[in-house]
Length: 294
Image (cartoon, rainbow, N blue to C red; front, side, top):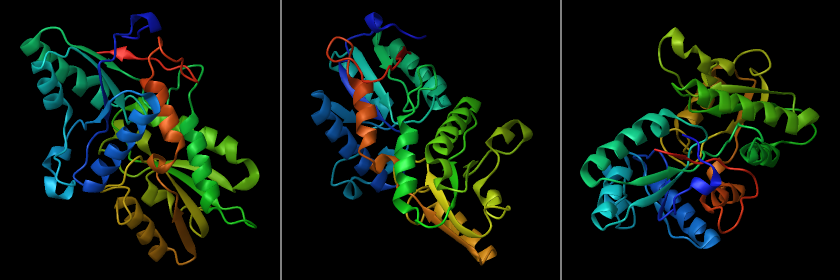
């Protein structure tokens, strides 16, 4: 349910929440982002993943185990806390936010009674007026690796999602990337790193491995714009995207690929997150942001 500004609960504990990763680098980066967000907003922001990260041994996380959301909520509810703000480190409204998270909160309400869990918008808000600052970050990433004197092709790649609305967000960002880069590049297309089997998930097409090799993307320099947030199994220096690029180069000797930095490494991400955390009674966000409640 969408909430008006005057319907927001007091944010109480603020969680910066990603999907979670088994790679220590992702959790460590999440912690650095949460610390920077705390300094920027004046609120205590705690790094908490939805899943997975708690399986990483603490010795790889500077001696401090990672937290995941349901146990984190339970622990704080035991201490009497009832108001929470989840700030998602997600590009769009994935099913993790619209299905998994509400189910876990409902389970906790059976145990503790009233729990107010507000969820800030994801990083891309496609509703008018659009918040497409992620596209600006990606433009910066492309221009940082673009070689002057030639017009390279660009592929915007994300993970791929079973949720059409998430892929629609990717396509919207790709269109803004295309507009923002203009004639400084040859072309811009969107692709997924992977997709589920079945025609019902064909909206994720084309896959990166298939697009690399098609006319316009089979020779010369192709910039792979990384619509990923944190390093990990997919987006790390030896991750899935990098391996896909290397295989494509081996299959097409005239092809050179270069990957941009991750969105999570750009200082502009902190501005977006800060606007999601700020409550209406303190400082209005620079651009509109809609919260919902689960």
